[in-house]
Image (cartoon, rainbow, N blue to C red; front, side, top):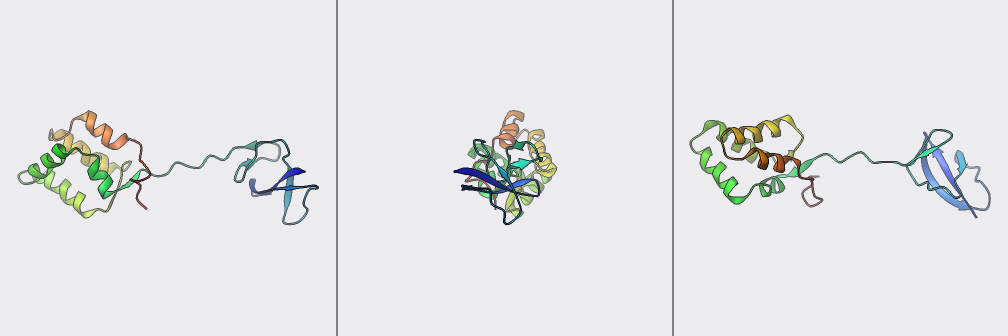
Length: 139
């Protein structure tokens, strides 16, 4: 029994096991003994493993909130009562349902909290750079 890959647009579309190479549906390549799977790329000679693009770093509002400690978040809420810039950040936070940790707006907002001594630079870096966990990911 041999393995054959159906190639569509330079990509492995389907792998089948058969006694002989299929002829229907398009272009087939014998991949017996090769580590080839669906979506792998094919340049006409060599196969390259498909690597999915990274998922965007977009998290839910709840996940964003939980990246702050309770004292940090409380400090922001208290500061929003007397500082218009912090209030603007807090208003934006309340208006959004998800946060793109890579967006310049999110980075600028966190930087403004650092400038107001509501976060340290280390904590700001952690909030923005900790890898997004599956339960945090926004749809």
